[in-house]
Length: 629
Image (tube, rainbow, N blue to C red):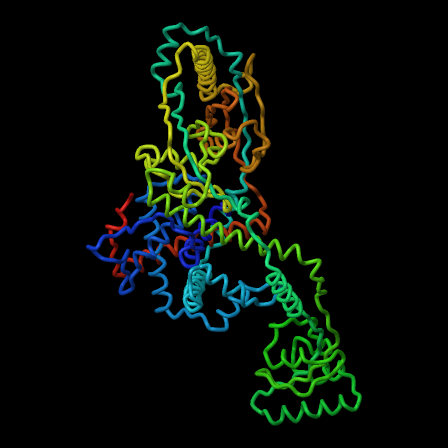
C-alpha cells in the first residue's frame, strides 16, 4: 500500500518533470500533424498557448518512453496516448498559472542552489557541464531557468497540500489493526491425480475440441526482412586520435583537479549588525592581539560571533571552492599555509581567517591518463558520427520508402537479410522485440514500405523492409491429437476434483467439522496467525488471497472458499478465526499514518486540480488529438 501511494505521488511529479525538462530525442521521418486550416496550437489555457510543436515533441517523448518500457510495443492506442499527453500538458500549464497567482515564488538564491546541486562534480559546480546539459535539453539557459522555477513552484504547492493534510489517531489505529490482523485457517487440498478417473477421449471429442479451439493450434505467421544497420562498434575503427585534443583534455583535467583543492581554516567573526564602526573597531583590536602572539583558537572562543564555530576555536573544517561567500573565499584561497589574513568584510560582518592546512588532489601524469582521454575522444567522435549517420539513414529511408537500394548506395551500408521469424520469436536481428514489433506493423507488413529507424540499443539502429511473408496456417489434427488428448484428460480430471471439493464444501457449510473431511486424496493443514504478507507459509499465493478476501464468520458458520491451485489440485480454504492485534508498535502506527496522509494528499491535490481546471478557460485542438497515422 505504501509503495503504491508513493508511486502515485512520484508519478504526478515525474510527469511534470518529463514534460518540462525531459531529454529530447531525434525525430526521424515525422511529418507535420496539422494542416493549414484550423488553429496552430494544441491547446489554449486561459491566454497561454501550448504550441503544436511543443505538443508533438511531448507525444514523441512519451511514445518512446513507453516503447522502451514495454519492449517496442505501445500498451495503448495512439489516440489515447495523444489525449493523455495533452491532458498532462494542460494540467501542467494550469498549475503553473495558479501557483504564480497564489504567490508561490522561487528566489534567485533557491534557483541557483538547485542548479548547483544538479550540476556539481565532487561538490564543485561545473559550468561546462551545466551549459552542455541545458543544450542537450534543447533549451537556452533562460528557458531552462524558467522551467526549473516552474517545477520548484509546483513542488512548493505539493508540499503545502501534504503539510495541510491530517488524519485522526482513531483512524490510524483502526487501519493499523486491519493491516496487522492475522487469520487462522484450515486448508483442505484435493489431489487431482487421486480424484481423476478420466478415460481416454474419443476421436470425435478430440476433433471437436480441435475445431472449437483452432486458434490454439496455428503455426504463426512468419516473415523475412532485408535490413541495414549502424552500430557504434563498427564506427570506432574510423576514428583518428588528435594529439592536440589529448593535451587539451589533460590541461582541463589538471585545472579541474586544482579546482578541487580544499583548505582547512579557522575564522573569527564580528557581526556588523547596526553598528558597523563598533564592529570594525572590535575586529581591529582582535587583529592586534593576534599580532602580539595571542592564540587564534582562544580568541575565537572568546570573541567570535559565529555560533557554528566559535566553541571549536573558529574551526571551519575543510572548505572547497564555491562553499563560502566570494570575499571570504577569495582571501582564503590566496593565503599561504599557516598565515593569518587581514580583516575581510562580507555580508555577515568582519572576519579574520587563519589557514591551517591545504590538501590537493594528486595529478596523474599524462602517460597514465592518455588511454582514458583517447577513449573519451573516440567515444565522442563515434557518438557524433553515429548521430549524423542515423539522421541520414532515417531521412533517406523515409524519402525512398520502396527500396533500401538508395540507402545502401548513399551511406555505403551492407544490405542484410534475416531468417524467417514470427511476431513472438526470432533469431539474429529479429531476436530484438522492437524489431519484431515494427516488422509486423501495418507500415512494413501491409504497405511494404521501409520502416522508420529502430533503436535496437543506444549504439545500434536499423531500418527494415519485408521481403517474404508466410501466412499463419493450422497445424494438422494428426500432429496435435495426442496433445489435445492430454488437455481433455486434465480438464476432465480437474472437473472431477472440483466436484469432490464442492461436495466437501457443502458439508462444512452445513456444520460438519473440517477434520471429518480428511480422507484418501485429501490433505488437511491448519495454519494459525497467518499474516497478509506470509506468502511463504502457504503452498499457493491464491490461498493467501482467499484467506483475507473472506468475511468473518456469521451465525456460527465458517466461511469456505474453493481455490484452483497452480498444481492442478483444488483447495478449500476455511476461515476459522480473525485475530485482531492487541498492541501495535509505534513504528507501525507511524507508517500507516504516513500512508494515509499521502493518500489523502493525492485526493486533495486531485480535487484541487479539478476545481482549478473547471474555473479555467481551456480550448483543445481536437484535430491534433485525432490526427493518428
